[in-house]
Length: 57
Image 1 (cartoon, rainbow, N blue to C red):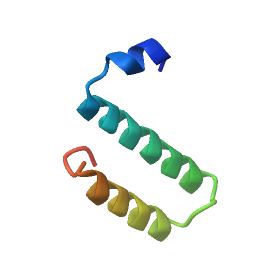
Image 2: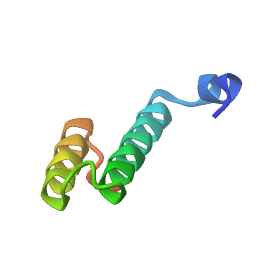
Image 3: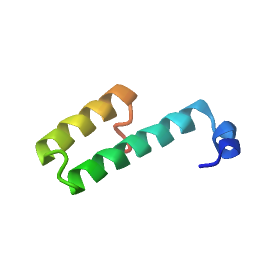
Image 4: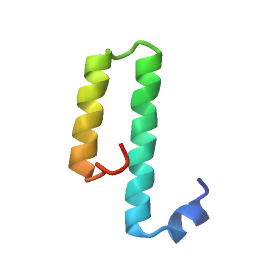
């Protein structure tokens, strides 16, 4: 996402984009075997809860 595009987002949309990027990173770790499925599930659950994104999971 370009800087200009980022600046145009609302705080809630920025939070959503950050959540989605973090989720994508966790998925990449899982696919590459850097973390186990249990670690992925725990990390994603914690991230989702702490960021208040239960509707996106």
